[in-house]
Image (cartoon, one colour):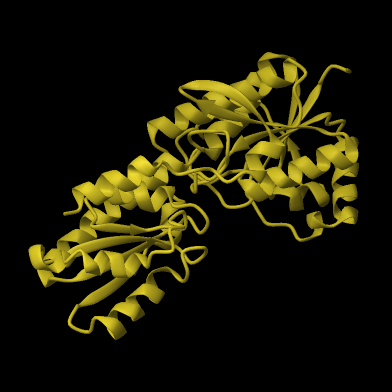
Length: 327
C-alpha cells in the first residue's frame, strides 16, 4: 500500500462543539508526521466545487475553544449522486489527496463509506454529532457540550415551572436517539423523558400522568426527544395534555439550535484531540474505512458498516434510574 502523503479534512452535516478541536488535532498530528494537509470548506459540497485550502499549524491556532466549525459545513444533494461523488474524487486528485478525514454524524460517515467503496479512497471518520447516536463509541464529539447546554437551560425553565405550578414539556435534539433527553432528564431532576428508544408500546404520556405525579408535586419537567420515532415532539404531547387532561397547565419550550452552539466543554476538547491524533495514527497503520471511537476510555477502530448501520442501544439502567428518582 502506498504511503499517505497528503490528507484532506472536512466537516459535514450538523455542526457540533469540538469540531474545531478535532480539525486542529488532525492538522497538527498530520504535520508532525510530515503530511501535507488541506482543509475542505463546506463539507462534501466544497469537495465537489473545489473549495479547498492548505492548512498549517497557524491555520488552527486559537480554534480549540471555538464552537461550530471554521471549515464550515453543509448538506450536499449533489454528493448523493454518482456524478457528484465522481466530481469530488476529481478534486481529491487535483490536490493529490490520498486520505480523507471526515468529521460528522451518520450521514457524513455514510458518504465517506460510499467514497471508499466506489473509488477506493482511504477514509477515516471522526464521530461529530450532538445526538451521540453512532454505534461503536460511547461518546461523540459535541454530545457532552450539548448535554450541559440543555441542563443549564432547563434549570432556568424549572424556576418558571415552579413559580406557576406548570408542566413544562422541554424538547431537545435526538430525533432517532434519546441520549440527550434521557440523560438531561436525570441531570435536571425531571419527572419523565419521552424518547424514541421506548419501544414497549406503552403510551409514555399516559404513563407519566398515571403516576399521579401532580398529587405530590406542584410542577413537572418532561424532556421530549424532537419529532421522530417518538411520534411528534413536545408540541404533539402538549396538545394531547390540553385535550385529555384539561385541568393541567402545560407549556412547551423547544431548545432548538442553541444546543449545537457554544464553547466546547473540556471533555469534548480532550475527546476531539484524542480522536484527531488517533485518526493519523490509524492512517500510519494502514487503516481505512473506519471510524475512531472510544470504549471504556480507550481509542477503538470501528468499521463504517458497524458505526452507521447499527442502532446504538440506550442503557435500560438509565430509564430505571429516572423512574426511581422521579417519584
